[in-house]
Image (cartoon, rainbow, N blue to C red; front, side, top):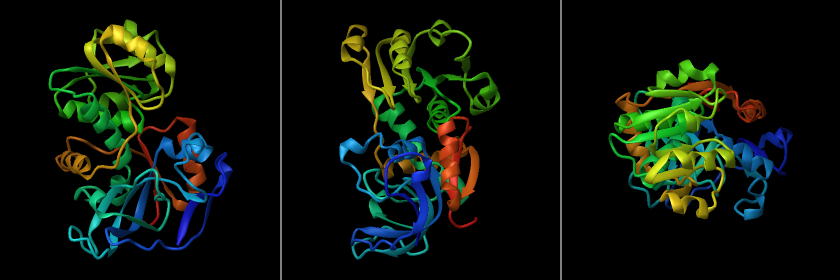
Length: 312
């Protein structure tokens, strides 16, 4: 099968499309014929070698951990899915990825694709939406009526986080650049802050939760000043010295998203109810995996980038 993979860590040139063997499924797995694969910033971080010292991955490594497609085979122990089912999934990040024609993955992670979405739209959802869900609800314990500040609301995680928080009845404040204001306001934010026009912490009242969906230790530390005692600060990339959070009675979380079918099923329901919508920046063929990484590293995409393996 064709796959976009790395044989060495490094720049975009390390990402190549080549032929590899189609995976063989275990008894508890399904084989998905991939129609589309989502592209996320973590794909580029892993490609660059940011996490190589953790020992999580071995090379060569197929990148990408979002997929939507049809089930081609089921393992002997699988009773929850059938051949031909249209599904989407976040593959475990510690395993082989989805920039490929096929994916072998545990059946208990796989969820039926939203009926109202294309394969490309569905592939844009799992990792980013699960990150937003687990940040807001699993770790942040977000409740109706609470105030939440979300940094980088024009990105994949941020755009889902705005919609999920609004669906839960929260008051949402979002930061982004002025050029993305119309897009962010279309997501439903109650307040918009242009982060390039003064300090965000001078432009809002105290909040219950802050999600930092962008890199920058200074943003994490500055966010502490706007959180109410007992509130939550969730960061996707940067750590925080616990000694800074404790005096303010703020709980700090450094989130590493987990594949979870129960969470994804709840997100699917909101998608089918159109309380959450998918915003695609671009859909590119698998052969353009390097271009996809160039765009995501440029940080100028609005919404999600998807690699199409089979045209919808």
